[in-house]
Image (tube, rainbow, N blue to C red; front, side, top):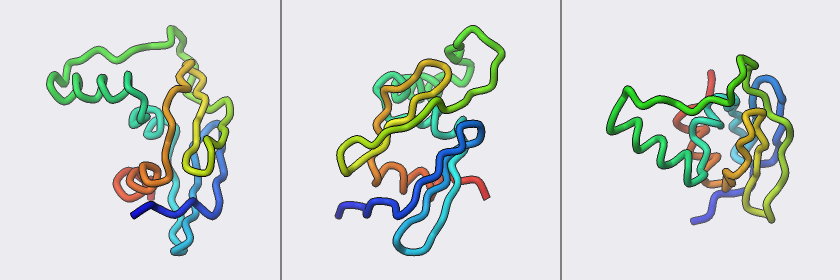
Length: 108
């Protein structure tokens, strides 16, 4: 079963992504959550390393600047791609994956 496309997306470049779904639910995913749970291959491998070794050193962009979103774009009719200030932009967030993140990691 394919997850429906969100009915509304609102990217706050300093805070995160508000998502409304057809069933009437609304969620907010913070930028750190979206970045940490990026579906990109490198982020998946990092999460595996962190699960195996909690002392895994996280990559750094070399600045003390807070993480922001530089922008976002649709990928076809099935996903969203977010460009982060740390240079990461390879994660493609399929609607089903965004819904999963909403259900498990959304801010109250």
